[in-house]
Figure 1: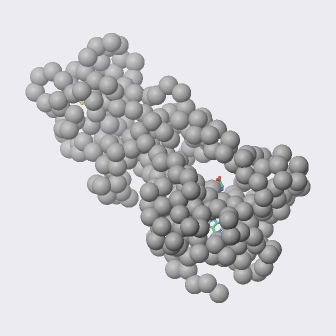
Figure 2: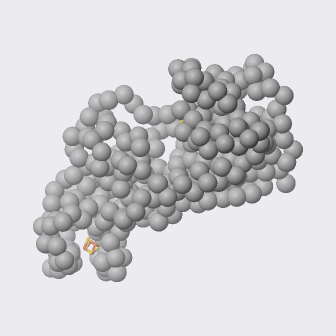
Length: 315
Ligand SMILES: C[S@@+](CC[C@H](N)C(=O)[O-])C[C@H]1O[C@@H](n2cnc3c(N)ncnc32)[C@H](O)[C@@H]1O
Ligand code: SF4
């Protein structure tokens, strides 16, 4: 039996809640650039952001204690992973339609007051999540051979494997601890095989078969693993010699939301399923320390969504 001591769970996102408005007619320059520099009282600029609306700038502020200064700096100023929630949900669950990515306005980038100001953000045209998802799906459709999907959840990517499976070029096994999800998937995908359990319990019970998988996927399950080094080492035992591990996950992000949405979310059931918010670079460092070579890596940045990809193979 593999003993895994779980670290404390943590959030993957923080809310920034509307605090007040500064009027700014359409086309007008930023009113905060004129006169003495002013920051709303008690507002830490790192914990705040203005959202450009048609005739105003709305100030949003976070009171989160789940993220330290360095993490907030990376989310807001490093990778610019701020989004406005346009849904009315407790927690957005379809990022492509529920969220709009924000970027710092061009005026703010050139502004001398930038470091002492929360900055004004505008919603980007296009949809970073939809674009990144389409790229990922196209990459998954290229996979051939035996595929093991660890923590498949509701198997949102299974459809990308169906054609190859039907043509006899691919076999698919999904592993998921939530039995109710697996029951639905078994009814939906006769061409796939699903196992109820964690990677660890499935490995121990022999449900993973003889191994030799060409591709072992951790699709947004990597940051849910209490001990990723142990899980990757375990996965390696089921991987073919020339096989690849595929890690896809999300870094932390900030959500501009209405006070009511944030309040309802805080009263609702906890969403703390993550143990880390590792980036591709952090996952690659772990992989290297375990002797893996990076075969492919998609980093996130200010123009992408918060989803990264890392593919590892044996040296
Ligand atoms: C955020 S969901 C991702 C689900 C799906 N792969 C996707 O991309 O939407 C993370 C999933 O990992 C599963 N999970 C967590 N720990 C696991 C483990 N040790 N072994 C297998 N699955 C695990 C959870 O039950 C959950 O369904
Ligand atoms: S950084 Fe942006 S919001 Fe702040 S004063 Fe300059 S232009 Fe205005």
